[in-house]
Amino acid sequence: MTNAVLRVRAALSRAVAVGVREDMSREDGRRIRLQNGLALVGIAMSCAGHLGTGRPLDPELLVHLGVTVGGLAAVFALHARGRPRDAALVFHGTIMTSILMGSWTIGLDYGNFFC
Image 1 (cartoon, one colour):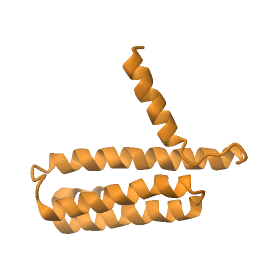
Image 2 (cartoon, helix red, strand yellow):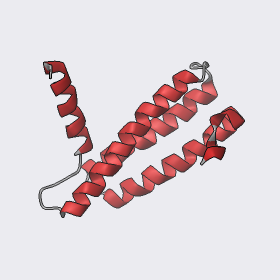
Image 3 (tube, helix red, strand yellow):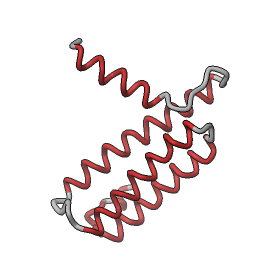
């Protein structure tokens, strides 16, 4: 592997491990890594989906993107502060809010009826 690929891989590994401590049980560490990984994927997919709308400067869609990315970024901050339950609540609340806001701003094209 090239040096750049190794650096990206190491950065992703560090991001997913935010909030995992050595004194935690293995199960708790895996749960935090999973939630951080899902939050990271959610941030990437939200940004890609926002650009895919064809209206990247629409104020309503920018608010939707800000709420989604901000909420998912808060998951990392809460894990770093040792508050995994709050992080889980924020994660699920952000996902539900994002679905509602997407349905409101985009309508049927949002595709949440597939869920």
